[in-house]
Image (cartoon, rainbow, N blue to C red; front, side, top):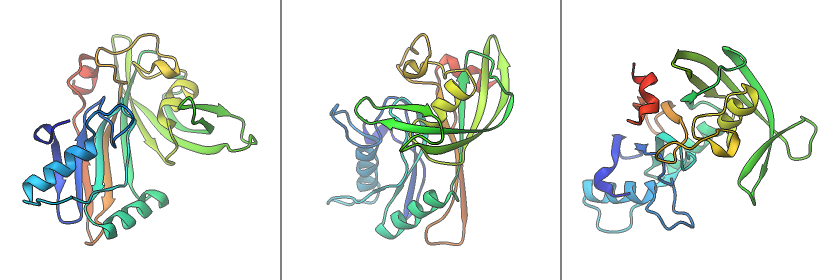
Length: 228
């Protein structure tokens, strides 16, 4: 990803909030593709005329096929304080998802117990007593529906890997569009899944100020329900 294409929502001396397009990795991975982190570092270096190495702390992540808001810290102090906010749950995260089956419940809160298979990069829903299982809690509600699709609001109260994808696929019986790993029958045209980090709210790491941001959903036609 090129820095010139980076959509920056906010930047100050301690934090930068950017939009991640679907398909871009947050950090460099084995694919060798340009990452969001690389693009954000290049953008900061250009905008602030920093010729040397730019520090950005990774405090939030999204799966590669997911779009939406991502925070990076610009100082080690900010990184520590933002990481603590994520750990304690004071960061408010709101996601949108599109499914093609009516959810089993129109609204409520799901609790699932998840175990990750790191070799296959998949997560399973298991019984609460299984060794290594971690609780994942997700609030959800239907925002709109049209032409056999449902727009969901998903609010994670924990931060487990693939949590929202499994809340939809296993908890609500409605896999996210394009999520072949968890039951969607066909891919989306850009290989994304219909999950978008819509909104973020957190305390500024050095000022007594609550920051809130929103990101518009992708231009893909499957997201027209969210734009209507």
